[in-house]
Length: 406
Image 1: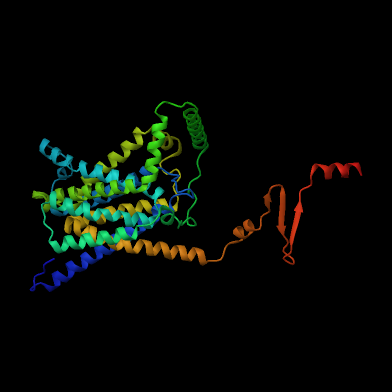
Image 2 (image 1 turned 30 degrees about the horizontal axis):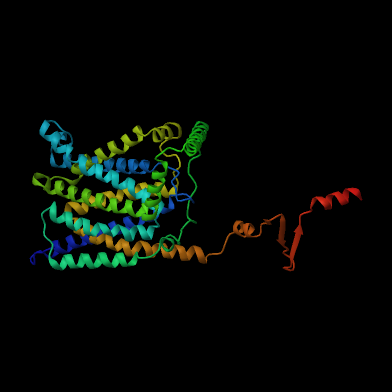
């Protein structure tokens, strides 16, 4: 950013806004990674529909931008037609926002499945492939050149991240943060419980039917699944997410700044973007039979906990911060600022892990450790008085018969 020496106050204010925007983006990005993990259950699965989080976040962003757009229109004395499409040309211009909206929709869905296969620290580290994909698309789509120094810095940064991820899969998945999972906030109704039970029965019956009926191509499918597991589904998904995320951000920046859109209000522009986001996420809920059934019988907030509701707010705020970065800065600022998240997220996870490991166990945990151990018909328990071990052997049938004879 080049500052005018005659306007130091303007330069300092712009730098302060840029710093504040970067801090907000880093904080929200780190919080989102943590909330994605903590909102899952103990089996690293989500009790709620992931698309419901994205739908609620898109609705919040759309509501915020609509309110701010009305404020801008009233202040500038413009017509409310600027929010809609009154002609064929304006309709075509509005349809351009459907492309980044769809890409963001895919990106936000993939991240949920990535977090079920990878730990947050590994997901953050592997996501740095977006550095190179963004740099390449930055050059091809936006026609902007990067100096050799910038390319060298990007390659060195990328290789440094790759070196951190070289390890076995068991080592990468060894640290599990499972003590902060929360129970659902809402009690399901009787119709919801009945529907989920029927759904589980249908899944079990279909799974058993597929197991008993061995099709000719079943062995080939099993081999393909084994290869996918060997390659790592989480790694494949996160590579796909990096490419989709880069495409979404690059295309979004392109239409945010092209032609007359450069001087257009960011709130009016994002109102069109988030409207398509609501449509895509709502369409997913309506098309999928399982998602539609769970929403109709159990409601949109079924399975949500305190972390997932916090995830909705953080996702909405993060999307708004990305929009401001793409409008007033560029994608390279967005990518390089995100590298702070690469350092910050593992540090926060490590601090949480150390805190949970060092804090005293509760009474329930102590009682579980003192439960009776049943091994091969032998029951042993430790007496609390003198610490001696008292073994109670189960009586055999011969002992019981001898007692009856006596």
